[in-house]
Image (cartoon, rainbow, N blue to C red; front, side):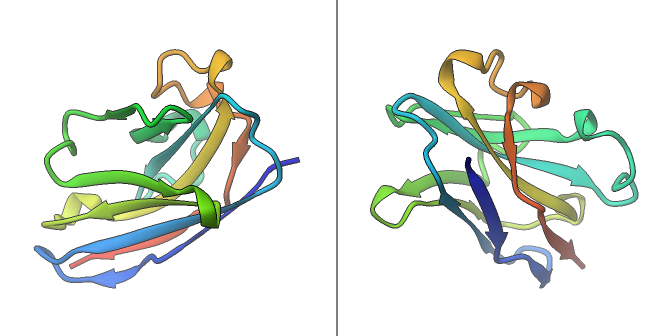
Length: 130
């Protein structure tokens, strides 16, 4: 069983930067995809399928980014610490929302942003940009 715990959210000023963390426990398998998704503010009670895919990284280090955030978001992992990160620069008001970490076997994910492909989810960390 895989557990994901996000942290690093908070209230930040526009144009600032932030690093989100996701600690992974359990076994994701040798071939996996891990990613960050965002639920916009005001949509917390909507179905999880409305979450926006932001970025993923797979077990071979290949990355995918949503075009809207590619220039400002960076996903990376520290395998020695079982931690996934999302670094966000030049924060914008529209970055406000709840950020979720997700994981799944690589064979089940297609396309990378398809929310329902992901088996494991954290509870999210809130980011508010003002």
